Length: 446
Ligand code: PMP
Image 1: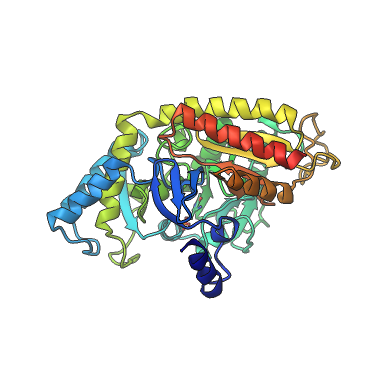
Image 2: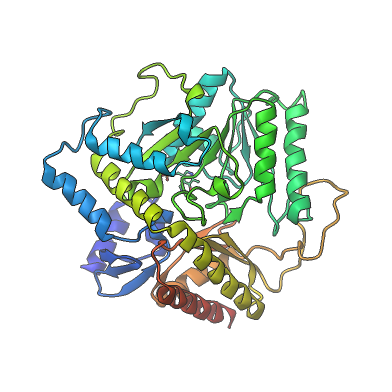
């Protein structure tokens, strides 16, 4: 079955398929961290549906919640009508929202993907402000539909100003740390002050508290607060895209909580649907300027996803899985950092909670700052990274797969090996994951 299914997929499915190319697996069973293929092989899944599976595959509480809806005879599809299932989801979602937003927030069901919620958020801030321009960041990823692409890293549109996202390793100003983050913030201010920038009065700013697809780059808390300050001073709605960072992933229930920043708009998807498709936008009620029907969608009312999502949100909250992600994540980062001393191809190890990235570099390549920024900024030691090594990253992924470990790649050059395990991963499983990754690093370093 295994070979035949793969052969038919290659013959009939679009060239647009992505994960399927690097992972020739035919999953037939899954539980927690583990996937079993049609060929009987088992894998530790640190891709987790690109960060969707906060509780891993087929968690009993999620399955039970879905079964309960199925057995109750409740409708599975009623557009956006009020149902007990939806009511329970909204109640649980509001329980988790950051203080400062929960008490005057509205939730809008979009659907069914993260990109749909990003579209809704962009339309909303444009409608609410009567302006069009949007501030977005280099390396950002917000989805694949037209509006989301406009604000993502690879694209460019005249209505969107692309601003430097702070980072230590490939700091656009060649200095890293707090100083690099402050230079990035000042760049943002200078764009807003520049009469020629075309975005002096933008409709909003959209950012990821940790860039995921961009290569696992956590934004410094100080920079987050600066963005809040800059946008608040100029009455620019701040949109936090927590599609990937939400629901405990980064060690706080929502990643904005690390900095204490309260955004005006939050875009949520992935884990909130407990492995089924669900996407919402949450915003300050003052922004709720929609006319009825101004943003509709047939699949805004997936009852099974809401039930699975309610169970997931409640389980993460009640079992303090965000705290678990914080402690286990920093232990995993620590071990990976020690490992990187043995393997010069591991250029940078970074992350927050259970969102972890290892940037693969050419150990023989020449160091350079790659800075785009101010010519006066000196390149500090430690901020002169070697060239990104996408081929090595792909080799690591292959070697991991051979050892029964599924990892994801990301970053502008696809040179970052990413781990997004379920928050329910046990200590022993985490050790097994890192053992296999270490073996893979050794294999590509030979
Ligand atoms: N925003 C972020 C931060 C994401 O990571 C993603 C998906 N990886 C999206 C938006 C888009 O979500 P979807 O693929 O469900 O459209």
